[in-house]
Amino acid sequence: RTGAARKPTSWRVCHYSASQRRRMPGSSATLVPETGVQRDWEEREFAQSIQLGIKSLAQFLNEFENTTRTKLASLNSKIARLERRMTLVEATFDSVNQPPAATS
Image (tube, rainbow, N blue to C red; front, side):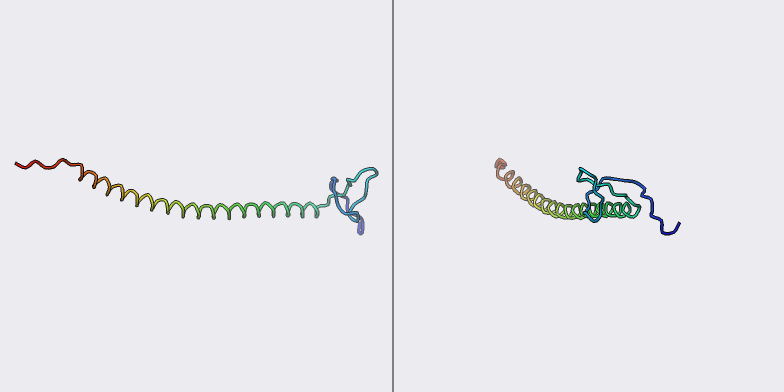
């Protein structure tokens, strides 16, 4: 049958502009036939929003990792410097607190 209207696959409640809907008496909600094309676009938009969310999350995690790595490297060098100072202070303290050597 050429020129025959396509039968909608399902119906759902929508809120479209007046030109896109048939109003139901006594209700602001409308029933619009959901075609395969509409569903495909909605699925693509949903998949695109998921991809964008994943991309944003990956970007945040990469930036977080880089920042954390930099801060940990800085802390590591500070701790190494403190350990060297502590070793020097301990050696100085030990040399000062040694009893004088007995002379015979």
